[in-house]
Image (tube, rainbow, N blue to C red; front, side, top):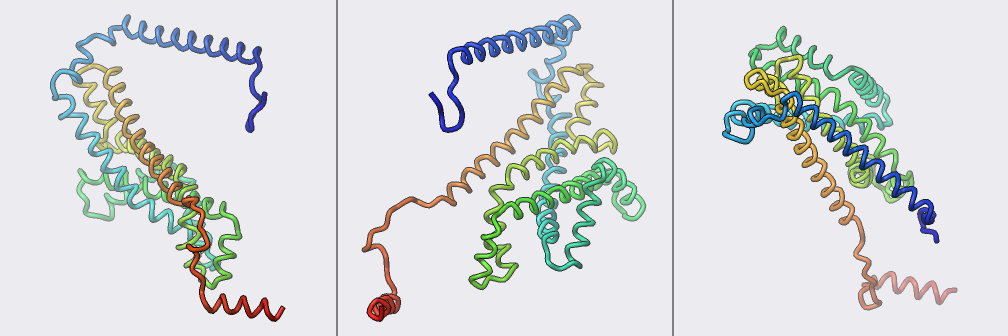
Length: 300
């Protein structure tokens, strides 16, 4: 038996897949057992190390919540600025005018080639030398600046690729009915390419959330991971603290991707037609068109 997408498995293939699945489950369980047993032998699973997270709110109110707040603040600011800036740069790279296309291409390629951590370090130095921003706020400004410059360049390439992926007939048909190029881009190309670009855009937004940790590692920005290091120095529970922080990052990024998946599905549903079949009584004809068609038939 065959399917539209693949050949159906025979008895031997099914037995082989069941065998491989069983081997993988056993191997995975063995690895988990070894990890848990090793942690237990070293005392990393003692209740005293995990108690701060499940008994009382001191660890959460003093370390985790402030760090998470700073992480989300920096990531949100970077997203709000980088998304429209990336869209503008991506569209500018498609311009027919060289004085727009060339500078946009240089900016995108330049900032896309520099590591985001280097941009953050340069941001701290520039803000310290040329602005009056306080030393307490400087790390936040530098982290947001580095994230915006790097991710706007990457998002620009995502936008450009998404637009170029559309069939040329879309823009040609729009121009044939008299739309100007900016109208074609705004009304035809961008709305259709958003759905295709959304997964890549969301992946980049997840990168923004994770890259805030670079500011904590180098610039003393008090984000979530940096707060975990301070918490480890106080409680002495390295594995427990990093595990809790990792779970929080997973939950934040999973929420972001889940929302994006819901939005993508909604956008795809909104673009589908209802599939309703119209009868003759549902079609309203223009009298001039009717008369013209009769006249054509008579002359023929």
